[in-house]
Image 1 (cartoon, rainbow, N blue to C red):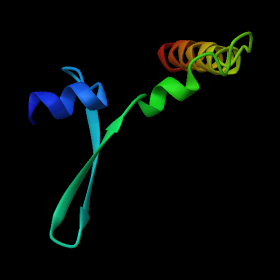
Image 2: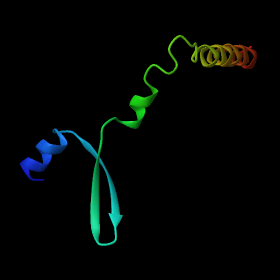
Image 3: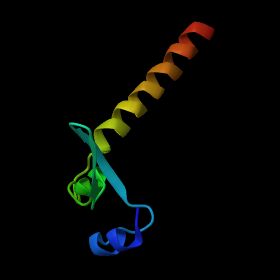
Length: 72
């Protein structure tokens, strides 16, 4: 990509592009933010892992209990 185009569009190394085909042309559109960046801070203050941690602890307890019964 020519330097003057990069400068005008403020395209820096590492810029990602959305690529689409328009008839016989390739259209590159710079992506200013990564899609995952839109989620940053969205769940701040929420305890989204609590339920998974509780479920995992219950699974470990169940497996340990089942192992003792089978051995015993």
